[in-house]
Length: 287
Ligand SMILES: C[S@@+](CC[C@H](N)C(=O)[O-])C[C@H]1O[C@@H](n2cnc3c(N)ncnc32)[C@H](O)[C@@H]1O
Image (cartoon, rainbow, N blue to C red):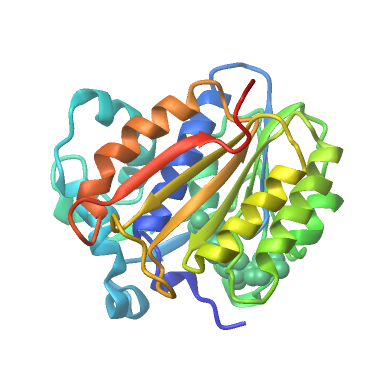
């Protein structure tokens, strides 16, 4: 496996994924009942943006870097607040100076920061070095860092004892068949835990593969399946990463409007053509 998230940490795709994740976690945190987080492909947890990998691509500069430099309307700032607060927690001085950005947290640290004492979190990561790094930064009584294969965790650890919670599935998309695997595993996981929220991240590169994936998800006929897509350009280009998407099953009722609003504001800021595009809607239209 060659994938190293450190090259991509804080890029547009991380921003989209983590803003969606933090809106879901903020919603879950509104009720006292405990929630569960299962992060099937967790990564290293914290990324040094001045490190060799991040500097070589510079992807974070047009992602988190651009967003933090941009002043938004109060409505957008309110929606970004949980995401920004977590980032600020790892970057002293960032509240007043966007150039103080040095570290970008990964999905496990967003989840830990927004979890309460009663909540529990499972983080799966199969690469030993990456898992050791995650263990160092996610050392917390509420969390377990596991060597379990992320795909298998969807059957091994579901259902949890909590009724509420979120499963993030964020594979590297390096192996053939990962789109099919994602759709098939969702159907299995949903049978086990139908009350959970599922957020499945995917790249938009091979448009035909994305279409086939969405048709396969639609065939599973899971009610309440939201599709969120973000494009770096108004016109998609074949064979390059031109955008990303998330399938969210059982989204909080507030999520579609929130993400539609926030992505419309983020599109011109992160887009490579200065315009970008986003869309949010039900995969199977509601009757
Ligand atoms: C896209 S990165 C995760 C990023 C992270 N979710 C975040 O948002 O910060 C994918 C991670 O999955 C790990 N990985 C690859 N295959 C895996 C598997 N079968 N099970 C669990 N983790 C895996 C990789 O080592 C990599 O760290």
